[in-house]
Length: 121
Image 1 (spheres, one colour):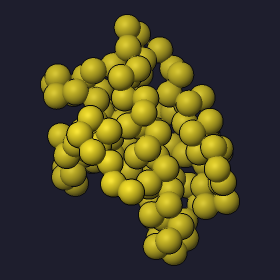
Image 2: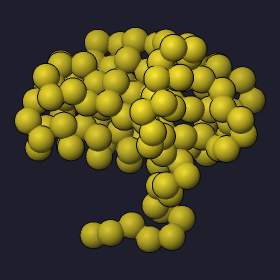
Image 3: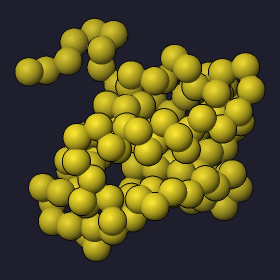
Image 4: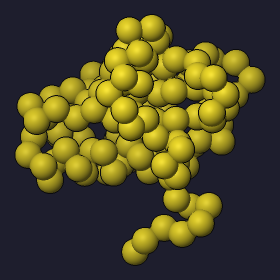
């Protein structure tokens, strides 16, 4: 099942270059939970963008890709609620491999409930 049109997460909504990841990790606000580290930083008005880092220490490729798919899906569905000029970097910790079902979404919801990441905050 592929996503079409407005359901997709466009390339412009993703952090793709190493320099972008490094800039955010140096200057962004850091929020932590048991399974994720989320770093957010204002951008120059290009819209809310997402970067995901899942180290090989987290698990094999199947596990890493599952985490990335679920984080992207979370971001895609909640992108409208985020500040329009924010970059978000999600770093999965080793313990994220054990998360099942909706628990990834619930945990990221708690982290991103911070006013600095929400629209109007």
